[in-house]
Length: 95
Image (tube, rainbow, N blue to C red; front, side):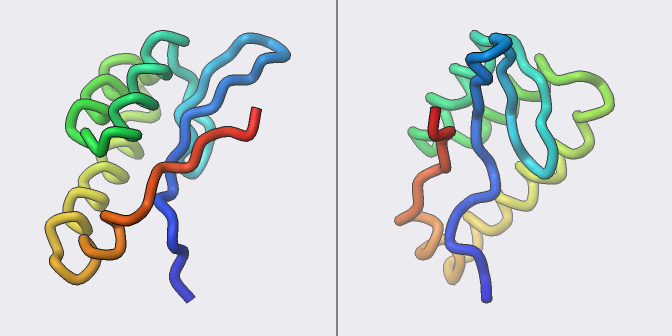
């Protein structure tokens, strides 16, 4: 049973003011970078979101970000999965 949403979201923890790119773990990003990634994902501009995430993420998260965005690009290029993903929107935090 495949999940019908992309496994990415941008999150703001208002309790302590930290911002995250949530893939399989929380990756801390500066607030402005997190908001920029959120805007690009919402507009399906994956390459731009990836670039900003890579520029601002800690070094130990870059491989994970690269893997996630590369796999997503491959799924988007596949006509079978692209049709499903075209109707989805990135998850956003409930805050």
